[in-house]
Length: 256
Image (cartoon, rainbow, N blue to C red):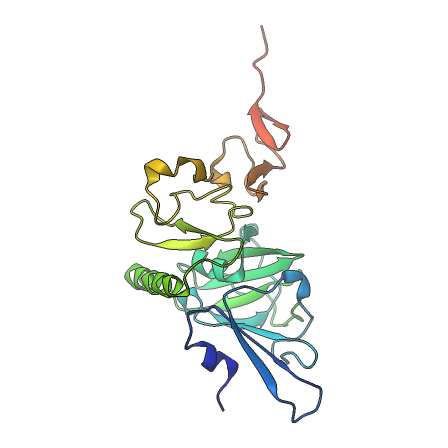
């Protein structure tokens, strides 16, 4: 039987969305192929093996970066790095292509990501939903393959014509050969604009849209900064700095 995911594989999209028309066992299903991710606040709790029954909608990421496969929802292992805010789960896969595991979760409308090689500590699957780590696994692939996959996704996005609403086509390296659709209002490493400039624009003429890597700001404690409305906002500072309006500034030297 042809599935919604099979149908959507024919188009340059990221998500296969499908739902039953009614609650009867013989109900027909509706399939929608989309480039836009669902809102995190719309998640309905369900276990990995259950799927979503009427009236809920099932969403599947197709052709994810690095060929990640969903493995259910699990307790986080100890000692992993803090959550990093990302635009979507798909952006988490992009970030984690060099690690075998990716954990992603929604907290409200915010997607978060952890790249690691550590498996869950307990063989006890959780019910998936808000504030629950979704585990994705894959075989770590060589950098050359990653670049070819990135080029393929670029070609598909060009066919699509534009980035989804609310995203900007940002170059992912100074050479300008590839781009990624980024929400510059929330992307912590490209806050307020594109770190390497907007795809298709000359860098010298694109100074106004250059973003900031919030994680590289001086004086900010590790994991204590977010990108909010295109602005880096710190929540705590290193010793020798003080927090003022979300910015870590050096403390004035004491006169002796």
